Amino acid sequence: MRKTTRLRQLIEAEELLIAPGAYDPYLAKCVERAGFDAIYVTGAGVSHSALGMPDLGLLTFTEMVDRAGRIADAVDVPVFADADTGYGNALNVMRTVRAYERAGVAGLHIEDQEMPKKCGHFDEKRVIPLPEMLGKLKAALDARQD
Figure 1 (tube, rainbow, N blue to C red):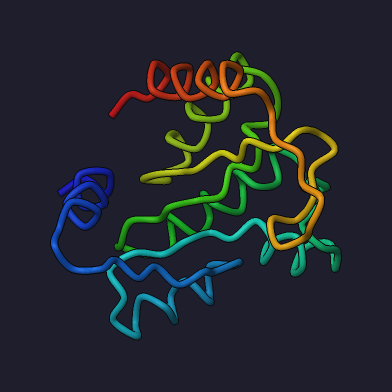
Figure 2 (figure 1 turned 135 degrees about the vertical axis):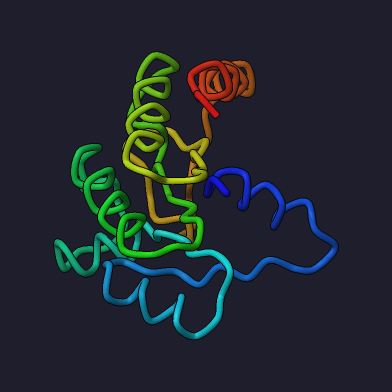
């Protein structure tokens, strides 16, 4: 079964889906071995482990896609990843979705923050206008292959 199909099944199931965050392939293998059905690639975790910095949008698109792809390749369960703000406008979001999908990531989320973004746990976040976010979501749906 494709990992995208499995993730959809898990999301649609009656049971709560718990997908612990992993920031590298080894930790992802530990999460899988512990019996979890899915793994979340945390942008904050990757930023902390790769840069020693908080999640402030410092990781590049290619760094996150590479790390998420390595994690997805290391495990048999579906991987759901943080795709930051989609790394730009609606066109960038299309590129982001295609790259994460090619990397083997089964699902992703994008944030609605203005740039420069703040860690989601911090105060004083500002969000983009609703029509702009809806455009990003439409672009993401149009870009996906599965």
